[in-house]
Length: 472
Image (cartoon, rainbow, N blue to C red; front, side, top):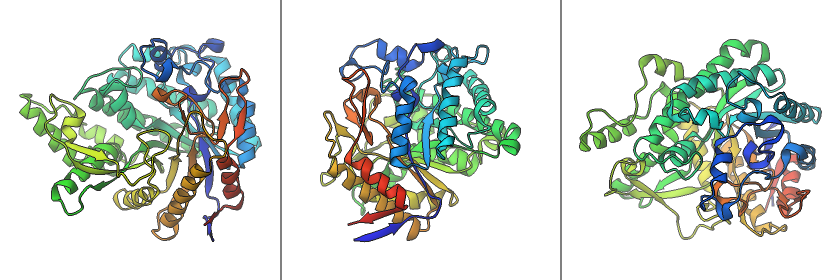
């Protein structure tokens, strides 16, 4: 048995997102967001046609969430603001004071408990009124987002010192605007992902500069963006084709956003070359990947005060060709596959590969200038109905935290905190309530939505309290 001690002042947290827990979809003047619209349209887009209309009821049951946070002894709590709860039409033309009051209560209560809030401005839930004007496919949204960010900084920034602008832009680009699987359900293969990503990167950069210019001196906070990435290894380590495919996989996943923000203000060269070649083959005169101007590159470069990583799984990568028509997948020419030896969590895509996180952390240290890193999401799903005695899942958490410890102590990675996904079982996007990631079980069949700790919650609380993992 080993005692793996974490650095002093290590941030121990759990994460949630507004649409996934709040409910109150039309309460107290909240405006529609794209997930309200998407789920209400039905059509089997979501597991059992479920919605986040009620979810965990956190808009009214927020004090129950605080009890969960207290029981875990967390030092930090990551949550997101609902843009349309604060600004029903997405603009500062009308401010919903009841939305402001709700987040003020939450923030003030967290601080009274000595819990540091880490606040995300945008976690997939674009106001429908902004989406109706093009959403992330439109340049106008860059300005709308900047104004929203300024509003949040001025309203909450006297108390919130850690900000994330956008959660997982890769997922938004791919699933919301390329494949149409997530709200708003726009399917524009070969174009949608790149255009929406282009505007998200600019929106993030504008929001960072807004803070840096107008708020940082007085509020003394920090701003970043949460990037998700698998770790990737060549399926056959001796195959040069597999190694090239693996490099492309990381380019099109992590470097797509991290290069502009952390390195040079521009997309990775391999990605630019590949999409340009494909575009020419299709008879186009310009690349389907938009270009940043020199001025935009200067604006984008260096717009993160720390590195936020959401990690769930690893893939073995091999080349994939002969995809018909322009698409992100066709441009990538690579496919990630699961090793049959890897255990699968309660959700099919999530193979449990703790060592992949350590390797990814070392890679980020090497590639992006040795930044301070916060693991802002990491978790393991149970299928429904879940086991309260989730000893198997705690085993996965143990393995993962041991790998984080190795990254810090043996690889010299500056990991500053770990946030489990998620505090509560919640509305898990198109998986609805069929995938249970929570440290606390939520009984969605009871009107009072009671929260009950899983075995993993008790064990995580011990880690937090001792700032160490007892590793068997």
